[in-house]
Image 1 (spheres, rainbow, N blue to C red):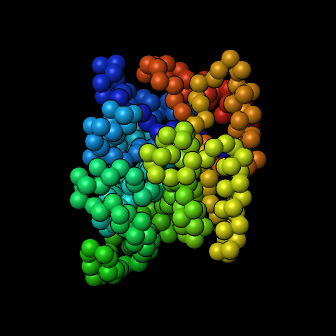
Image 2: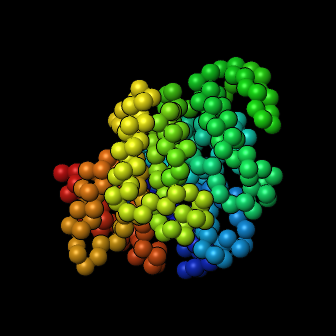
Image 3: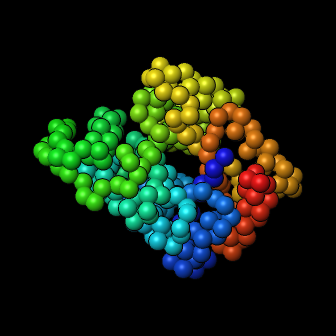
Length: 305
């Protein structure tokens, strides 16, 4: 089992502690020291105030932020979790991804999604109803430009004739490309070409907001993982070809002690989960660092002995 954590951004609490560059560097190093395998940022370039007031969250530009995290660590994978592919021309996305991969020394993983906020699509001038077609088009472009010099492609809204990506990615043929979401089409895409799947966990309300299927419990998740295995076989691939990252494993160790977390990790591994996304307690910045350290000592270290 590997572990990743999405860096939480709160600009208006603790006198800006969470967006202080020195603290961000300290957090990333603490995660690395704890044995956590990846740090992630998500993607909301133009959120609405209504969404923020309703429980939405702040973000940095993920590619800029991940380059920062890469510069202050040496082992930690830097991940988008996730980047909304239809928001950008795919050649711009490829350039950002390649830049992060080169500057991190080949430590990048990119979780991709179609997006769900209509207001954000509108603000960026992207047709919300085209998002699935734009996603599939971008997936073809990304895999093509990473592997093919002098690459050409006729898109819905662009025409590329003989484009080359330089400098290109360190990881060959390209960094791992995972897909986030719970819909049937997501599983189909994962089975055809992706290197990972990141199902969306959380409440039914969150699933409705994200316009995706709700995964009600562990049994349903296990059923979906088994179905993905069947779909991979239909594509001539196997379960070992795909990582599965499941969210909401609490960092904070409760009254039940570390064994409770170890049991959760074991149950996930039995289902075929290979990564767990950690949920950080919403306390103070210093308390979060302490929670990371304790999780490393009492959960990660025993697992890796």
